[in-house]
Length: 91
Image (cartoon, rainbow, N blue to C red):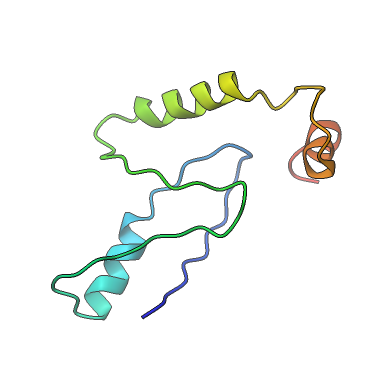
């Protein structure tokens, strides 16, 4: 079985909890045991596992990613990245 979950982000850097989406599919299909694979085909998206007990963990992850790979780096040559830098995310 293959299912698709479509999400819409509101910010350039954002973490979304998809647990409820996945659980809904599992309940609907009456899955009792097995293995589930969550995959993102987009090159600038990633999947993490986080218990969400501390909301600061998401903030820390996003902050550290920005430290490692700052968005405003003038060495970026990607047209997509340059559009975001010069025009803004919402354009």
